[in-house]
Length: 403
Image 1: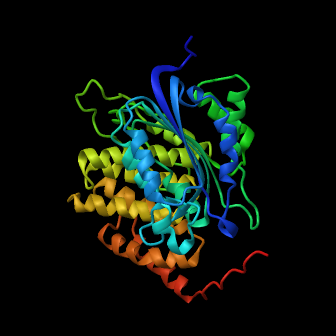
Image 2: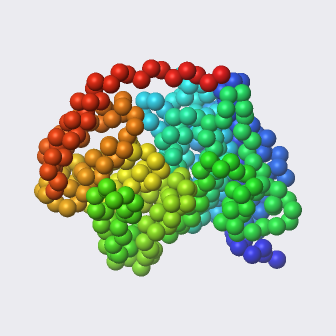
Image 3: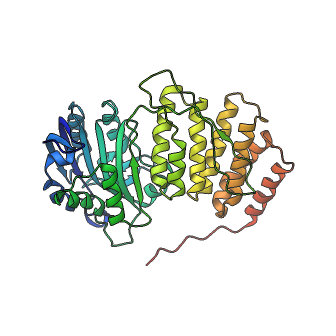
């Protein structure tokens, strides 16, 4: 008898649990492995037969890459269960999964770059790969993930929990994945989306980012126009978000992702929204190129998501980048899309309460404002006046570390 939702092909489940030793450890990653390993492999892969691969506290990223590559080469369904901690490489600003011997100084050589994982899974047939994660983010990684999300590419199901950095001397439990395993061991095997909701409700915490990305068809935006929500009477009129036309391909999913993205953002699921955006933006970059209207569209959606996530500095940066990209396409300074991007950057800069960040973003905004003055007179002078005032303010002293 085949369980409902189960694939008749043979599948592969790969369990990866890793975290640095000693004081650098933020999560008890391997504690979930006995619970998951007690679940029948066929349940882990949702297939009639399955192979189980377990990697507990590995030390070498190349070894992990080899095992993932071998698993990705199998033709049947592949499910990866990953628990550990994510760090940000200071030089390249890339997310890494820390391993047993990882330290801040050796991150680039002893941790597994997340884009390596994405690269190995990318060639697989859409709809055959699922990744379930239960990870904790180090402080700088957390700040980036809140606005950029965690993404693996189109055609891959991604469910998971990302928890913020715990207080000092506290270690996070992989409660989200343990909730998965507990449900399975009770004899219940619901759809993954339902299981994700149950595990998220049980595991918490309230400030965690929960990911539920299940766009397994080749993405292509629908042709309908969707406007960015306007929540402030002081904010310029919203710029129409008109995605690219649908290519003439019957295999392409005819869907508009923006309602789902903004619904997730307004519900506070910013990590999920950012991951969806990253997936569609990556598709636009690969399909149309970095300077295309389609790629700029997703840059603008990211800027709006940063605003909804309460990050005006990042939103300002992204809106300025969108304006620069449109100007580079020879769009005139009085083009409504260009003016709208600069107006929004200006508005987000005014919302900044960190004097240092405002001083950093002020000069490029002044330069952009001189080229794109907008419809309201005195915009350039307003930026200059506030920037001059900011330079008269004393620097903020270093914050004391919490005891």
